[in-house]
Length: 87
Image 1 (cartoon, rainbow, N blue to C red):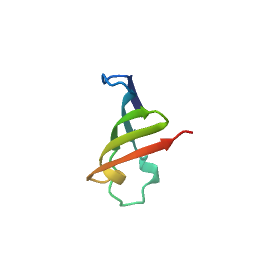
Image 2: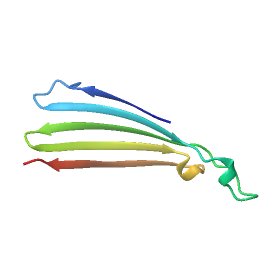
Image 3: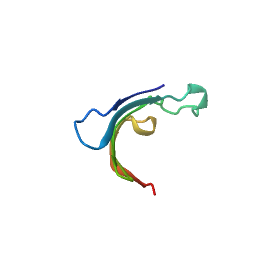
């Protein structure tokens, strides 16, 4: 399952900006597990990002949260950013 929302121009800035929120859930069918293997849990992820357009430069900071990483118990956080220069 995948779902998401995008808000255009939510921040009162003189530059173009958007904020996006996304959710994804992955599951593995029990028919793909080896006999005797522990059951897999559904992996869930949430992503929050912003996109800022400053002249010809796109800057997009991103934060991702994961629960049951790889179908096992555990959590992870990924922080980063994407950039793109359009000439």
